Image 1 (cartoon, one colour):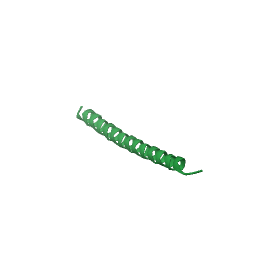
Image 2 (image 1 turned 180 degrees about the horizontal axis):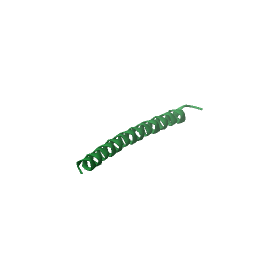
Image 3 (image 1 turned 90 degrees about the horizontal axis):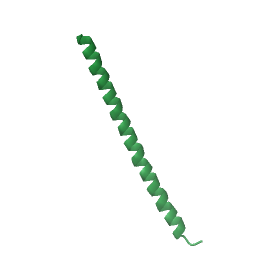
Image 4 (image 1 turned 60 degrees about the horizontal axis):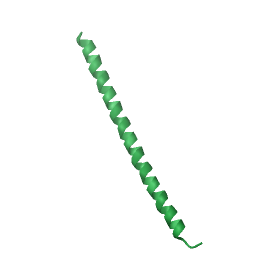
Length: 52
């Protein structure tokens, strides 16, 4: 009986750690995506401001 409880808790721990790492990866991707979008916007504005 105790073994089952131990297995369950370790599974829950693994799941929580996995979810945490996934959310960290997603956050990092979102932030880098926003960063890239800002860079593209500013580059586009610089190109538009240049005299043809």
